Length: 402
Image (cartoon, rainbow, N blue to C red):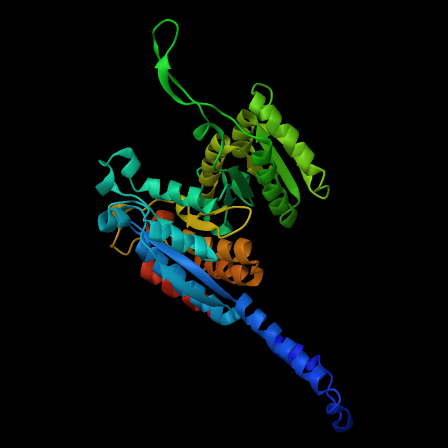
């Protein structure tokens, strides 16, 4: 029985003798049921903006779209898509890495799925015109400030890690990185001269209380849904900005007493992620520290081609994308690994819409496909089946449809 049938059956039938006197009340209830059913239907209809981007982007986006359609069929979810250009493709078509129409489409959607941006073709352009500027503009325009970077070592790929299998097996870390503040955006910054007349370069690492509070809340919420442990990473023994960071995280913790909070200095954390990664559940940290730790954690998994990510804000659509680049050297050759893109779609379902079962269906299909030995070139292992993007998609779809 579906949800609308459940709601309809909740109304008790009227006898013929009472129907006349109760007709207006019955009509109102019937209208309420229809409205509730309509609300339910609308809640399962999600509008997505797809940004295939550059290089292998269009190839892997096609796979993710097919996967979403199939998981939607299985879980009674309807997706409506709008596709836009960004990055190099947008430069070629419109002369800018982020057309206004692309940004507006993203902002009015329920979520955004991005593939990859950049390529050798545009490397000689001025810095403010390169494809990567499109991504920075998207993040700013969509007001996403929290970067979610999972590092999960799948059992089928544990041998592919550069570390020993017994160290990385079972690793499941979520790095929550503040994305729009800190030293990358702080003012003043630039070049100048010191008192000796020597040229200097300078940047400012600055965070406000509200900036720390909002990223801490996101991290506590995520930790609460995982294993209930959050490690805040800073450099409070040296930096005043980190002292404020730690102070605000401790204050925010008062509202999340069910989550265990610990603190670690960035240099120690970089070492511990390599020495004993399984000690971590969720990590929250600032922009530059998160940049470093998330990349270090990503290499535990054996291939950057397996890693999804998300950028979310306090409200509105989030931006979901694989960690890897556009790989222009293999674009159009049916060699791309689509799994990180597909897992980014799973993150979208989980963190944007709360569609946990649908997300798990995708992840189960990925695991089943790997169990069957299918591997693209970047994750190829001895004794496995080397396949391209298309064959990997076919295997995924078979496992998803079961």
